[in-house]
Amino acid sequence: MNPKHLQPDVPECSLCADPAVVYQRNAGRHLCGAHFTADVELRVADTIRTRRMIIPQDRVAVALSGGKDSTALLLLLSQLLPAWQDVRLIAITIDEGIIGYREETIQSAERLTRHLGIEHHCISFTDLFGDSLDTVLKGRETQACSICGILRKKALVVGAQQAGATKLATGHNLDDEAQSVLMNVFRGDLPRLVRNSGAGSSGKFIPRIKPLSLISEKEIAMYLMLNDAWNELPECPYTHHALRREVRSMLSGFEYMHPGTMLHLMESKKKIERYCAGSLISAPLHACRECGDPCSGDLCQVCSLLRSLGK
Amino acid sequence: MKLILPDHEVLILEHDPAPVEQVLLEQGINPLEVIVTRNKKMISEDTVIEADDEIRIIRIAHGG
Ligand SMILES: [Zn+2]
Ligand SMILES: [Zn+2]
Image 1 (tube, each protein chain N blue to C red):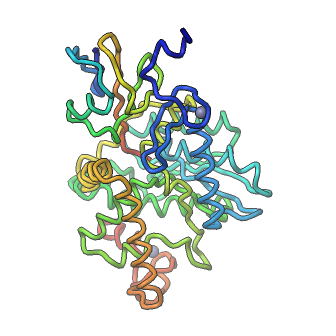
Image 2: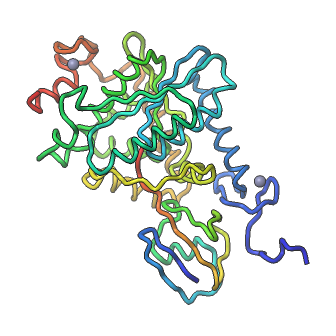
Image 3: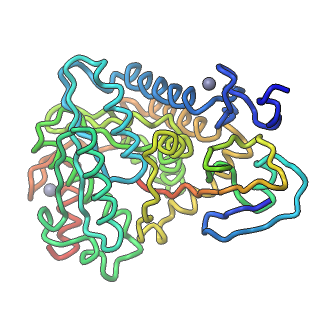
């Protein structure tokens, strides 16, 4: 008897007959670890190319939290970029100051950049805004993710500018993106639904790119595990308060029952963007009275947040 | 079969051979939210698991 038949219940890779690690429901095929890894790399390269996310001579700053998505992003880019002309990678880590959570992920980020030989910059909320996130959030825990999001975005832009980056890459995956669409709909926030995406505009903005936006959260976790980069890291303690948590579990239930749900949400968003083109709801840009950043009102989001925090 | 759940709790099940997917659903777990390994090797959701298998279920935590 052929030894293979000793385990008749292990499905085989549709491309090479090795044991499968995944059944891709959309493509209707099984893949082994090596072919799955190659498939993820191919799809990310394709996203970057068709959306012109990276061009020759770019200096790409990767927002590296040390968590799974950004770790996968840095691994993938460092794997893919040698094929691009003169593109350089740097990693930027933001230390928000979250006790019992950030220490481990920062160490993981440091190990990874050292291993890959990638220039690494670290910026802390304390350096930039005068306080750690933990301090800022006392009594405001329910707003944790929105406050942190605004400050982290600013910190990343500062880090990217200091590093002379021409692009800022984040590890947002398909699940994140689909959740954001739904959350903006739930909140009745159409302008934000449309505004979020842009590859960025000219002038002071460093264009943001999301090379993993068509890769699911599970695929990212599998990619890491198959490439020995899986770490069981703590989850941010503030996510317990977040609406995103509920949306995440609901949406992944829908995706399981109705494969393609997340991609359909992304298509809906694109259609809305097209319909809105030109008639965009946002006011003309001014310079922020405090910091000079472009914004729609008198004060930018960061400065008005800092003001409301008594800074 | 022996199931090691995401919170490391160990569950011994009297179960006929069945696809991983079915066992997960019976435990109230969405297969999209976990990775399953047998003998430290990742397996696809339609892999049939048997009485003497030890199966580890790893939850995919959210986070950047
Ligand atoms: Zn294969
Ligand atoms: Zn400002």
